[in-house]
Image (tube, rainbow, N blue to C red; front, side):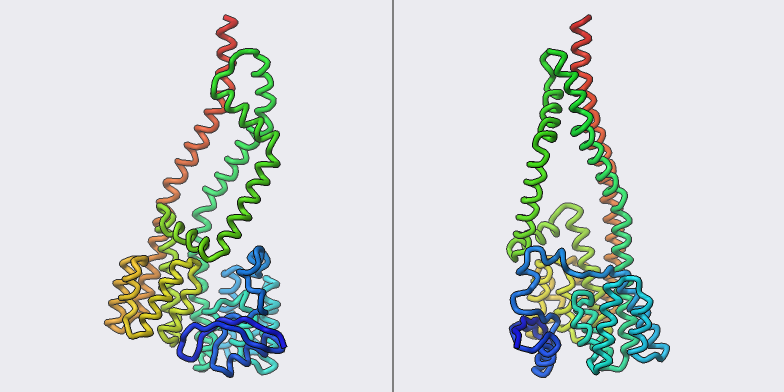
Length: 404
């Protein structure tokens, strides 16, 4: 019997974790199920991603667009009357992403053998997030699996649209930064050494800009291997530090406090939190269970812990708005809309409005950021090129004056 570590929820919606024995992963999940525990992660003991420095590089991931497309196809075929076996087989055969197609084929094999769909998806937790598995379970239990998958597809498509807008908006400044850096590197590393030899041969005291430029060129040519080695070591050390809870907390706090970027990160988190909560509540999930699942989807430990503390207070009888307000992290708009939704009984609709408004504000923040980034980058490139030209021309002017 092998030992497995698990995390999940008990029958009351409380988060639990621990270890269990089983002949395999499926046997361990079945044993936990009998104990009334819904496991969201079951891994061999000692193999958790946080315990492996490079585990993130090996993690299989599927673009959210592909997952949304597959989910939409599953919902459409099921609503058309096809059996689950036929639906999974058809969708898997049409997918271009091999990781997702292979995962769906494994899910189909488990379903054919009599396993519930959400348990089969749990075996593929690297591809299907907790919200996916939870909503599928709700759909299976209520007999509305096609509707649950349709709601999931809506959620995933909206997240994909937001990511696409962010990527498209940042593509130009990132490309400009890459090209500009490459040009400067080429000038300083390959072109300037030939020019500086001529300047040194002038046999005169060189101006300060010229001496600085020659020093930078010599440093890049003679110690480039050392510079890149130090950079790689620093990156590895930062990655290792960030993999620990203290380091991650510090980094996540910076992400929320950085000028401009911090506000945009908070808006993105607010949109994801609101839309996911609305989807889960609309699918019939209890509030506590929805909070637990949604907290895991926020890639920020500060926000995750705040939501967990809020969930504990909700479990003790508090409303959702009050503990979130005490955290003094979330936007006032979110708190106010949740309070209104709780009083009116329309929390799901209020959360959807918050998500839509947050998406619009994200786009506005991106536009403001781009409006600031582009002139700053142009100014930086102009100053850099101007400094290089000045450093080259100054000694030439001095030499021509001395000859005159």
